[in-house]
Picture 1 (cartoon, rainbow, N blue to C red):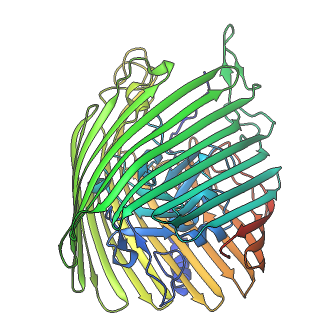
Picture 2 (picture 1 turned 180 degrees about the horizontal axis):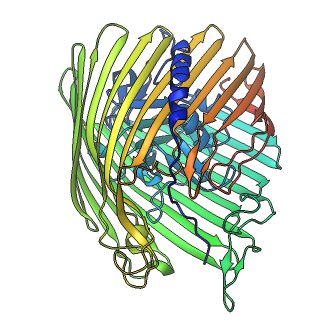
Picture 3 (picture 1 turned 90 degrees about the vertical axis):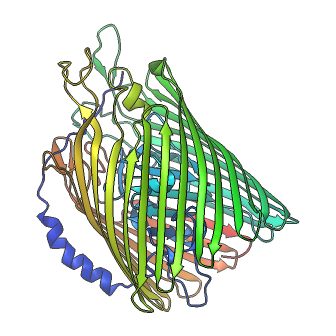
Length: 640
């Protein structure tokens, strides 16, 4: 048995956000931006295309939804230490992590919980069905081509759990002539990382494969004198190996058959305590480790059956296999089988309907889940997009029938209007729900089979301005969630089953309000970007702020690239957060980076992370890394 951590809320003042807001708004307006693509686009550049907003390709500039695209160049040049860090800098996600890189991570999109965001890799929904979250700590940035983030409820297209939004991660797909990429780097804390990738396309066959490896000695994940006595002075490092492969065959123009596979193996150390017989006293001395293996395999087909009708089929499996503990290891295995059939029909110029069916079957294995049933979900969805001069409309509706928690119908409606050649107004409204996890339903001594899904209603209003290389946007949103699933400490048998000392319960309601500001601009060789988020997330029954939600978070970046040299900096500021029995203070982290392209295919890189050696407490009793220097070398056969 391992010691658990409470998630009780505490009430803290929020007037600090009011003081920061005017300054941040001014800063964002003074740093105009290519708002949705993270990098500004030149007038002659191809317009970026996304799929997450409507499930079909559309120009990013036409999206009615609040979508952020993090492109390949941004991922390569950001100097970030993890997928979580990239999402925090560029999409405004708040991150909770039990230590430094490689440790278990939570993510809060628009103030919703970790289980309230859908995460997909190459169209496959990923994550543990028992925990209800994706393991970003098992992913490597080196294997990712680009990321699309839909911020805001999207259950009308994606079903359960899209309360906060959807994160779509895409691995590399082969295009053009053969290309070989590789990079290697060393850093403090005995950190090492390396990657090699191969991609290309020829004679109707496209291919891409990559292998990455990362290791770090790290630091103790838990701080001395922690609340539960779990601190162990040994360093809690990690090892991670990720392999990806994608192959596609296009027998005739407009028809492609593809196969993709990803496997990740993570071995990370952490601090905890065991309570073993015969005395059942707390013992924090074992070497606690988390062995996580994730696998995603899919087969897909996409073809244009007529000039107006395109159909897509995908069959996929996602597996999370975890062995965790110290002296005694517990194993949990969840499998998710997914079948999706999607059809895009052009109704008229500028008008498209999307019709689809999605079946998901989830199973869980492990001694504690003995007798837990397999659950299946059948979802039917429809979407519509239409452009009518200066106005655009997007609508969606979906019905999900789940064997564990019944039938739910959700939907969304949005519209945008071009007020002029540079200014666009957006408005959206929708409903959403979050499904209980296997832990919520079946975990012994905690799960309750009758627990209800969370349900939400949301509205948002946005304004986007674009002029040449400058643009800026602001989005205000309001999301009301009922039947929040949380921990009820009742041990009397009144609300929890007899013999329970606490249980999963629909304990409260929440009102989540916020404003997101984005911006970037390019002056010659100088690029500037800004992301500013303000959040007020509260339990409406108690008035308390929801745990671990900062009232504000900002990320400011500058990059100067005069020819073969490049220098850059990113400042990330996170406000105070309530956590367990006391609030956590805010913190700011400064990261610096520089590179020298001494040959067209070769680049020498260096990074200084947490340059001011700031003491970071991501959640109570845990600590991140201090100052860290990295030096690396990058190669790209096609030229950098």
